[in-house]
Amino acid sequence: MIRGWAHQPGKHCASTVLSDLTKFYGSCLSEPLCFGIGAGLGFYYLEGDFFSPTRMIMTRSQLLEPNFFHNLDLKFDWLSEPDPESGWKAITNQADAGVPVLLRADIFHLDYYNSQTHFPFHIILFWGYDDEKNTAFVADTGGEGLLEIPAESLSRARYVRLPYHQAQGEYFPVVLPKKFDGLGPKARKAISVQADHLNGQNGNDTNTYRWMRKVAEQILEWPSAKDFRWCLRWAYQTIEKRGTGGGAFRKMYADFLQELCAMDPGVRQVANPGDMAKIGERWTELSMLLKEASEKNPVPESDLKKASGMFSELADREQEFFERAGERLE
Image 1 (cartoon, helix red, strand yellow):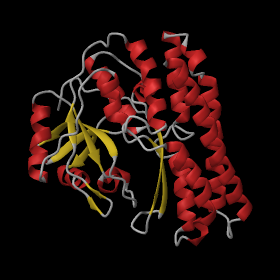
Image 2 (cartoon, rainbow, N blue to C red; image 1 turned 120 degrees about the horizontal axis):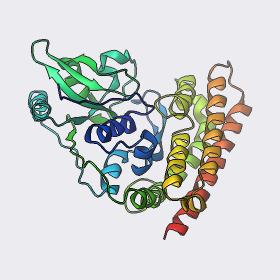
Image 3 (cartoon, rainbow, N blue to C red; image 1 turned 30 degrees about the horizontal axis):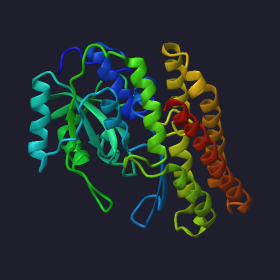
């Protein structure tokens, strides 16, 4: 076990453990600040019979972890090992050296979740292990303290094989400075990075506004899906429940902007946290509509048309917010 380990329960997996890491090393950044520095907002749409649900939305950037380190002028690259045995040795060697390790894992194989759904992009933090019991100790989002899990289960979670993702035991040992110089300007710059990523610039992320508008069109055809109600229910969950902090992560981003305003009051003129909070509330309203629709039989076409309009509206509002912020930060 790494001495002095730190964990404070949070809202989202990656931002929670990134905040834990800053506490462990002494800089003590809040979860919203870590999320915002990581430019964590995003939106994706996946469709296919090998997905569950077959129409799947995700509301977070896939680049939060690298963004966090790069925006703080630190290096980051996921490492991997070819097989579970070498993957286990790689992370236990780091723990022996007193270095905590970020891991990607599939919640389906993390015993404490009892999940029936695969999600191989979950982020946890490895703090140690017990050779005699063959277990690992990890920090995970809302867990109180460290969670003990069989090493075999962790291995399955790290090396899952799915039709759309072949995990390779990705991990990253984290060493941070005790203090970040110029934190305010770096966090402010992260807003510009967020704006670029949402717009699909710099080759970093697909254009999220285009995906939102695609869902606005496609949701009217979802009734043809074999798991139609599960598609609606998942959409509700990934907006409001599954580690988003509510409102498709937009409420957490508003908290980031509010915290940044205390360091740099000029941010309020560039990216007003109150405006982002209202966008987050609108996402919550959309999620409740989807939740209620998933419980109806049949689902009224009027509900789907209303949801379609709200997806389009949110695409417009977010694009206007970040294009304005991007222009003022140039």
